[in-house]
Image (cartoon, rainbow over all chains, first blue to last red):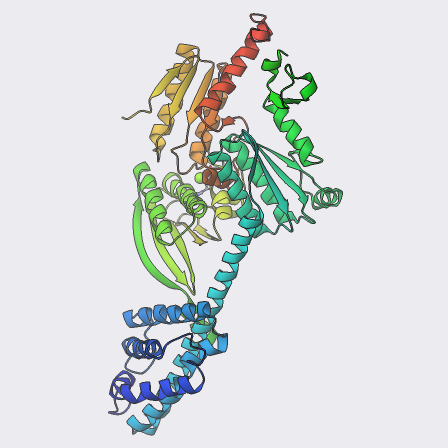
Length: 301
Length: 144
Length: 133
Ligand SMILES: Nc1ncnc2c1ncn2[C@@H]1O[C@H](COP(=O)(O)OP(=O)(O)O)[C@@H](O)[C@H]1O
Ligand SMILES: [Mg+2]
């Protein structure tokens, strides 16, 4: 700095009280507290922390020192503020104005506390840059949190809407309903593989009767699941592949190198056959008991 | 200019450490260290397994073909997401034809030829630089 | 040097691989198993990898090799207990272990091997193909 004015960090320290007052005033005026989603004391703490972290992140010339500890804590604090605001339901502009509304108080403090005109201009320029930068970071963090929330909910819906059901000792079924995007396929398939272990299931039927379309990526996930299940020692049967889907897959060049059956019932019959079980009707059963399953050995086949 | 500074502001290296790869024991250590960093970054079990397996492949290449070298493990944070970056470096003979080395099934040493291609599939980002006679550097990142 | 113990279980050999296997140990296992199959005329080899947290192409190749060698010696190799995360990763890596049989656990693997021994006996005419009635 070509003068003996204070550094920006010192300036912040000297005028901290006024800056905070003005900043909080502006935040309040812009309605930050109106909805009651955040308490006044909480807001005050956030503002105070922000200024003290900012001071630690500044170089003498007023630019941000990105290797400083202050900068790292400033960012993690900002990330935290944005995240909590995203979760509390603030809008993106409400969230960003937390940082942007600091500009005016900073400018006023610089104006009051700096004599040399060139220093003033330089500080204002640096401050403007840094507030913009931190403001944009806030928006990014906000958006990311929203994305995470959406992704988590999508995952939860995927899990809820696709339960793995046990059809028989050793036979699981996964009736998939709705569009299979590749994100959902991944979740659902990991669940299936986990259930195979938990239930010691030798056969898993993936029924896609309720799936309107399948894209290449999804088809690949399906096939990878079948391959992974085999590595674990279980067999998969895919049932209910609609004619259009079969056609699309052929057109896409996806080789459906798996056992498939027209519907869940046929797939189940095949599964029982593989386990050497059969269902016989009550009439044939020896003593008129309710329908029961017998193994071929029991029947003396 | 602003965009650049946003780029910089976006990614932070949270922790970093270096491991020497000089023996088979070191390959085991690589797997353990990478696993710990992945757990610290909150990776799911499947994601942990993927990056540890990729690390095992590249570490073995560094040892077997690169005459040994180092691994730099970094935990990264970008706005809201976390990741692990692995940088393997050796001063070995280098790779003259990178495309061929990346081809599934190609091996010059009696392996299965799946290490490089497989590691690329298991990672979200994959970079390889190599200069014959100078050495090889492979960088992979997996995000949570 | 450490070696992985090989247990005899009826007509089969059982190997339980512990967490994080060293490359040298893998190579020693390949040799030991070959010798033991020949010495015991085992008809099956069960490799329990339920403790393994990863399988990379090196271990994958070892499993492939063991399966190929034992086939030549008339023994069937069954890899049992692969974890879901490991299986998903292995598929992504590009390894299918096509020459290897798999089972969910040791018990199921043993059944696979017994079925095969039984089928061979039927083929040779040593046995009726039905269990006793
Ligand atoms: N660090 C390295 N230095 C020199 N050559 C390498 C290195 N890493 C890989 N290669 C070359 O790339 C080939 C393919 O590697 P990879 O896909 O891991 O298969 P594999 O290890 O089974 O040979 C190797 O056979 C080797 O020729
Ligand atoms: Mg390799």
